[in-house]
Image (cartoon, rainbow, N blue to C red; front, side, top):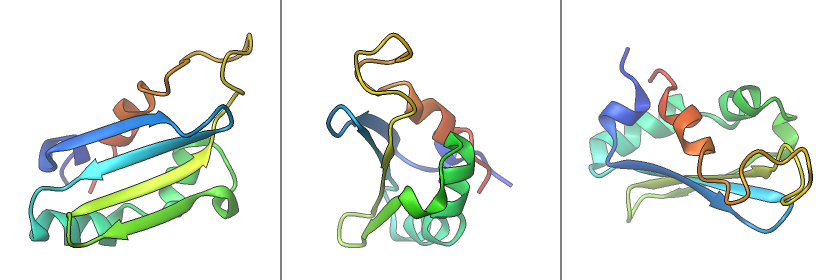
Length: 99
């Protein structure tokens, strides 16, 4: 198995408002895109972030070779419990997934 971050161009995460995060996986090639689509599921992302799978939305953009996930933030942005105001560090967790 390979680490996701080693096989794609970039994994990026960011805020999608104070209550949501977005994770973008830029695959680069159709082959990498197909492999990511087959192995990185909403259930795996939900388990990684410890949220219900019902709350994770997945979007596939084949023309761009991009897979995108939107999910609730672990803490509301800017609260005392929030460890990442911009949501950028969550990409590192996703990049470590085995594919």
